[in-house]
Image (cartoon, rainbow, N blue to C red; front, side, top):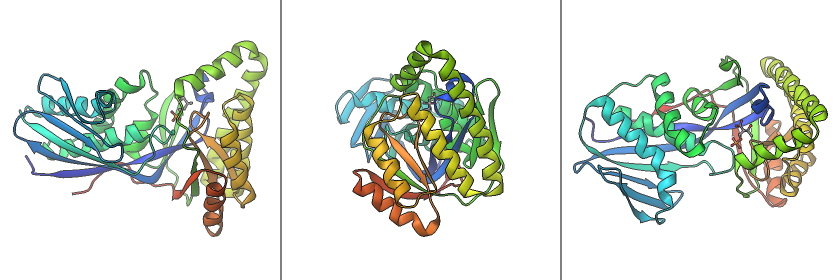
Amino acid sequence: MMLQSRASAPAKIILFGEHFVVYDKPAIVIAINKRAYVTARPRANGEILVKSENMGISGIFSSDGRYQPIEGGTEAERKLKPIYTIARRLLSISGENVGFKLHVDSRIPVASGLGSSAAVAVASAAALGKLLEINLSKEEIFRVAFEAERIIHGNPSGVDPAISTYGGILMYRRSIGMERLNIDVDLPLVVGDTKIERVTGEMVSRVSKLRERKPFIVNKIMDVGGDLAALGVKALESGDLETLGDLMNINHALLYAVGVSSDEIERLVYAARKAGALGAKLTGAGGGGCIIALSRRMDLNRVADAIRHAGGEAFITEMTLEGVKVEE
Ligand code: PMV
C-alpha cells in the first residue's frame, strides 16, 4: 500500500435538457474545469476518518460503521457517508484490513447543481484505488461512485458520476443511456451562483404537477426541449457559439415556462445577457442554484462582473476533456 494518494474529478453543468430528461428527452452534460480533490492516507486502527475542508465537517466511522462527529455534529454523517461506503467497498475488493484518513478539498459550490457530491465520490474512489494499488478502470471508478451516490440521491440517473469520471460532453437519454460525444470545442462559460440552495426532487415534482394540469401544452414544451438538445449537438460539433447561445436562451425560456426559474435566476440571466453573453440559462434543477452564460473570451470578465452586481457569485470556466485524474 502507498503512504498517500491524491485524485481529482471535475464538476458538471447541464447545457441542455434538464427536467425534460426526466420525460425521456436528451440532455447534454458538460464537465467544467472546477475540481474536487481528495487525499487518502492509511490509518492503522481500522477507522475511517473523513474531513471536508470546504464544508467544515469531519467525523470518524468506526469499523462497525458507527459515526462519531468531530466537526459539524451528527447531521454531517449523511454528507460523509458516501465516501465511507466507497472506502468499505474498495477495502472488500482489495482484501486489505486497514483504516483511512480522507481529506476532501473541493472548489465546487455545494447543492447548486454542479455535481459536487458526485465529483467528490469519483475522486475518493480514484484516490483510494490508487492507495490500495488495485488499478481501477474508469468504468469501475464510475460504478463504485455511482453506488455510493445512490445513498444520498435516491434514484439518480448516474449522469453526474459519469461526467465526473469521463470528462468532456455526454448525451444522456433515459431509454437509451449515456453516450460520450467526441467533441473538443472551446466553450468559454461563466457560472453564476444565486447562492440559494434548492432540492432537486421538489423542482422535479413542480414540473410533474404542471404537466398533470396541462399535459397537452407541457408535452409540447418538452418536445421542443428535445429538439433544442439535438440542435445543440450540431452547434457544438461545428463550434458555432452564436447558435449555441440562441439555443440556450430558448431552452431557458422553456424552463421558465414550466415554472423552475426564480427572481434571482432571472436577474442573473438578464445581467449576463446585457453584458454581452451569447446565451444564458439556468442549469440543473432551478429554483435557485446556478446559471451558465456562454460568452466570447473577451467578454468573460464583463459578464462575470455583471452577475456579481446582480447579486450572484460568479466564476469563469470552460469545458474540460479531463475526467477523473490521479494527481500523485
Ligand atoms: O440536481 P441538478 O441540479 O443537477 O438537476 C438535475 C437535473 C434534473 O433534470 C432537474 C433532474 C434529473 O434527475 O434529471
